[in-house]
Image 1 (cartoon, rainbow, N blue to C red):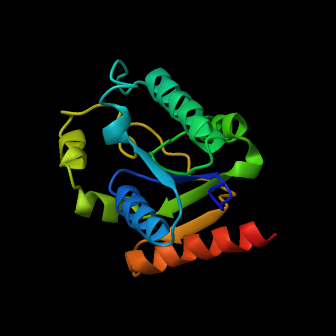
Image 2 (cartoon, rainbow, N blue to C red):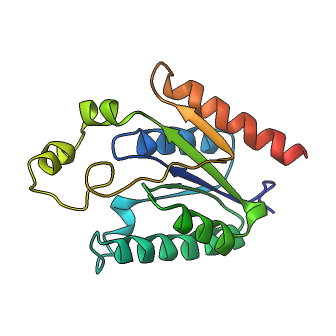
Length: 178
């Protein structure tokens, strides 16, 4: 009915990597092409669905599990779901892929060096983490396990957002033809 293949596009990377910027631009582009989408990110999920969770490893795991379950429901409804979450642990991303279904899950690694993420520091969190005011901060005192076999790897240094959106949409088009 929607004339599209429902899928979850799961953007993962450090805080400040550019996930939300890419996700927003990708959603705008797909909508301009007549696609039906929904964007899930930390801001809209932590306001309700996950407002009871903190940032411990167990809470991060539960956050990703809940997001994966919601994304699966949207896929069942025929939507293209774009998620933008740090999702620092490989096991949690593997769980999300299993929940959604591997044939409907595209992992996009937004590969931005830590130094660049710290330079951008859109919310001042790296600075606060370096001063010890924020603990269990991914990339500082909590690990980020970079994907070894992401479906797509994008680098934000030296790349325009529009070029990254084009890279992801070309992947979607190839996948839809196959």
